[in-house]
Length: 90
Image (cartoon, rainbow, N blue to C red; front, top):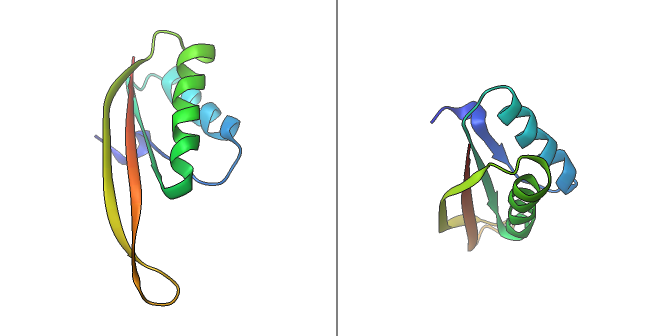
């Protein structure tokens, strides 16, 4: 899996990420991985569903991996953040 077919989901509008996925799929990439953590997880799910239902209907869900990362927060304490990886395949 090369780095360029990974889309990191952050705080931008959902359609920005949908456009990124659709652009990659149309350029011949056969699979794209959406990565998100924390509050962006629901946005990643939205992106996957919009791509599958509205733009590229032959895209299938591949593996969906969930995990927890330990991150030092601004006060220097450890906090756990949930992460998700959603694989979209043509």
